[in-house]
Length: 241
Image 1 (cartoon, rainbow, N blue to C red):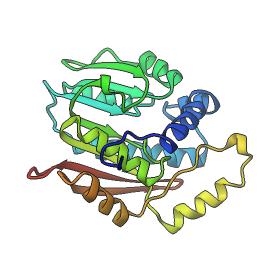
Image 2 (image 1 turned 60 degrees about the vertical axis):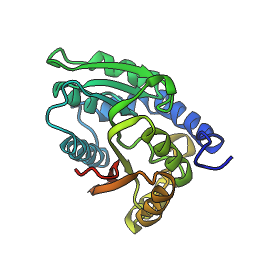
Image 3 (image 1 turned 30 degrees about the vertical axis):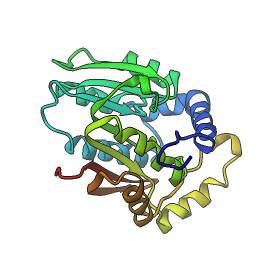
Image 4 (image 1 turned 180 degrees about the vertical axis):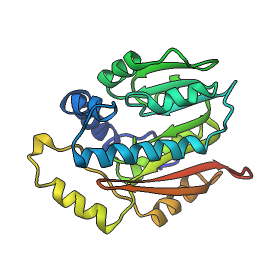
């Protein structure tokens, strides 16, 4: 069975468990604070600013009017992107591995969503029971997976997406490598699951092989202190941004 027909298993499943444990237990309080308006230290402030810029970028790539459209927020965290998409009228299914973060997202859900709606769910973004979507956004939810596993996830998502697939990855840069080296100096219990930097050229080559009917149409890197992430938009061949 080759990569084109099998589900992401093995490394993906093991990594998914590690990520779920980290965000649901080890880092739940820190993540709740980072995604709030509460004061944070200098390093985390750069991460917060970077995530805000990335979320704004991804939202700018979605239609301004999402009424009647179904959107998957794959790895929704505490729900900030899902809320903005719902305010444009989208029917949002927001999924995250961490039940703790999903519960927090529900608690923070505002009442001014207008015509949009959000269903928060704890689980795997590849659950086939989630159905089909017009747009999928996976912001920083694939950055801890190795390239082959990430491509399998993207391949599976394109099979259930009609419009666009927006995702981010950790670009392979000297600055990011230096940050990883610093991170390894912290006690193991305080570390997040390691990022898996990807070379964009190799990522695009693998996508061309395994998702040949979907093409990259635009990309944007966001670098803010200790946050570096790159967004890529995929669309079915023959469509434009």
